[in-house]
Length: 168
Image 1 (cartoon, rainbow, N blue to C red):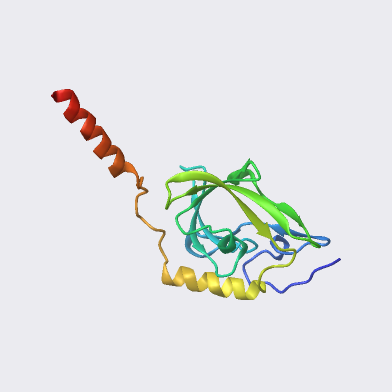
Image 2: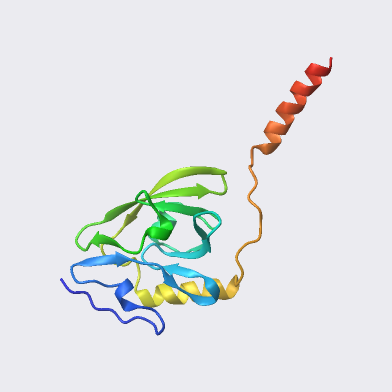
């Protein structure tokens, strides 16, 4: 089976199409962002963290269905460090599954998330590129918010109780 596709200027069509298999690849995108069109992710490299920070999750994408959200950090893909992953080959006949190790910012926890990738792109690549450009235009800078443990207040309260008991 041979797939053909027109890709916007500046992006490598080999990253999106293959003969007999569809490939996942991260392409450099506007202003230092990266686009993973097959998963529907706009990413920011996180060299200090050893993964990639999710800047945006595109609508109705495999990542959106897997409940990945902005500010999550994808650390590994199928047990391989994200930085060492260049291409992953998927079936062009049936859905494939990817196991992502993700730091889920809203829960301040690391977990494995299974992403089911359909054999065909979830939307035409041109539409994915348009949506990704719109997201970057609306939020041109990565979030500067610090990650905080939502349970840290509980721990502080618990420790303060123990300190009060020791003083008595």
